[in-house]
Length: 221
Image 1 (spheres, rainbow, N blue to C red):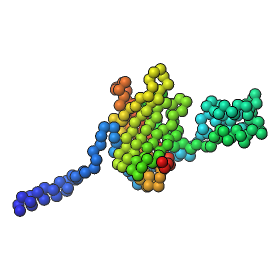
Image 2: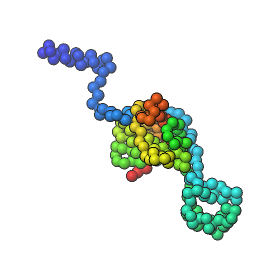
Image 3: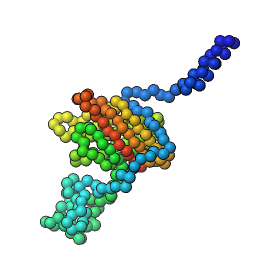
Image 4: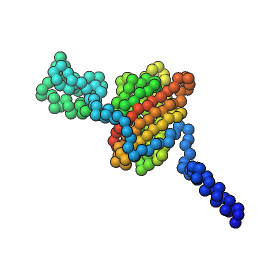
């Protein structure tokens, strides 16, 4: 009886001192605990900015045209000055997407072959998991990938290099933090603030980082 009473007093003492018994899953290397918040504060006004798809621009005649990675069929729809023929406009815009694309990420980073990105896609894979990645462009070839599952986030950087024979490389997260708005998450929107440091094997003394804010609808699989 005395032994049981002593054990009970010991347990109560631990709890009163702020100790708790954590039965949650232990984090593995490369995983970050998510800090869920009911309302994530900060300036997310970047989501009101937009761009046309890459290659789409307004020509000297006030028309939305395309230059670069465009359907080859559109070249015969323009004259020698680049003006789109009036009778070809409807067919032209069936081939060229001129939809305004609203920004979904604002960030800064030091990673290889990165000149900035304004867009991110988040997709629900199953009940517990959402996968997210930033878009590459002509000047940016490193993408931030986030796997958000239950109470943890798994960040990584994937480099699809165009330099020499580097090819594809993956960099795992060493440490960092991420805050996610729980109320918006429950409504199908990913609103987050993050700050990650990645393993930089080529030069360990130079930190490889990616930090910023993102706001995007979570697409269904």
